[in-house]
Length: 196
Ligand code: SAH
Ligand code: MG
Image (spheres, rainbow, N blue to C red):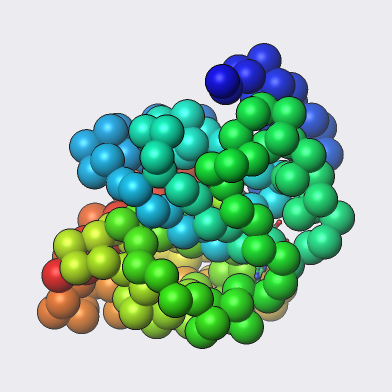
């Protein structure tokens, strides 16, 4: 049982609360990817209120399990309530904590990893992602172009650290010989990396 009506309400409330949930066109692309990959294990970094994780559950088979990490306890609580109301609490495992601390403790391999949390941590998330992905699996990263700042040669101080780390991430996924990457200018930028 999957309650689509509740999922729509979760989306509406998240937008009202200015929570940066995944954009519609990015989600549409990920839907296509999940349809083709048919993953059984997905790892998400950055749950927020569980919107994207719930959408992933909707786009995958009933035996696909999603682990998702969230640092903010309040958001994690709201996410837990949301997935319960949607009817998918047996498919989504929320782990509360800083992904930088959680990732090294995970003993699991994933078909798909979705990075959607602190931009300054993307290089670290990638490093752990490569360790936790199954051979041939996909690492997806959202907000990779950060409102165009990543492509711009002048950025305000406020964005500079995030931009530097996002560029570092892009350099690694495009230059590492084991990785095959496509960067799409949809939503806030989505990178799709096949790990060989
Ligand atoms: N994936 C969600 C949106 C995530 S927004 C969706 O599309 O519906 C990014 C989330 O990452 C925020 O809730 C923030 O609290 C969380 N976050 C930021 N840094 C983190 C970290 N180091 N570890 C875990 N979660 C983090
Ligand atoms: Mg995002």
